[in-house]
Image 1 (cartoon, rainbow, N blue to C red):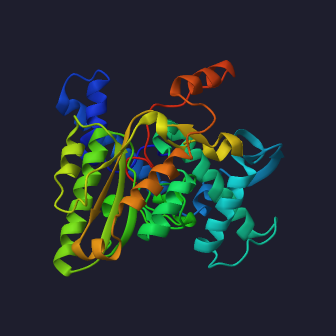
Image 2: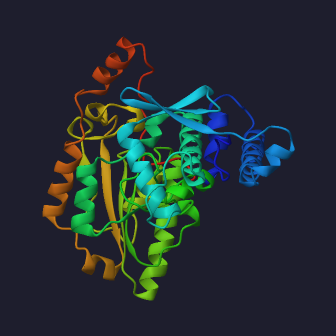
Image 3: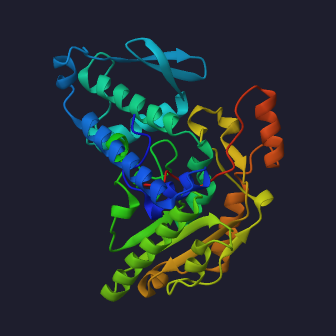
Length: 353
């Protein structure tokens, strides 16, 4: 499965390779470009008709869904490896699939072609994000915070998300080849809305954060010239030393100071929430968080950011702290259970989202 997005936003992958030990920057960038091209080739192969596999002698595949207690296990032709998802999240994926792939019609019963297509689509999404790893990079705002943004600022679309962590029915994501059946609009970096209100929570990777800020600024400038109403609620780590922070603070469209929330005072939905018990979906934040509000003139008139909204959003983010009060407690819990600990990352979607 092509784990890597088909674009390297801001040269982030090349810089990561350099930090990991590739001494020559040009060599690191060339390797990153080669990996992205290979990912694009795999995407094209996956998009080819399934009949090509049959013609090649590989035979048809069938995804089965089996009850595994609180989780469901999805297997291809009954074999390992299998993917797991909570029953609650399977219901969410079903609702998204019916809305965006079946025109709002209910999912046909098991044994029908449409039901088989749904099971295969779910398996593909689960396998893609399992392969990607780094669940911390898939963390998202809690539902209470999202509801504040929707109710008070008219937000109805996420700039960085996935079918597994989205709150709204429309979102941008890194992997539209597997995410589109569930409502993905494609990469945020290819997205050009002229108006509307959006939540933007990029992966906590410096190059991606800066690229996202630059793209939002470009969209806002175009909307301002056209007199349109455009608004972004931008959720980022409070890393004042990285270029992203300066870009957001220096934005011509910033409304008020950034809302700063200390790490212990708020949380996120865990990046692995789709296979967590409902009581363990939330996790305390690894970092202080900054929330910037970027709006065109008419956007600010339509959705004014008041002090009451800031207080409501702070309270909404506090509701997602979870049962572990510190990151250290969270890591001890996972290690004690013999599981891999949570990533220290954050952000609402993969780098190409």
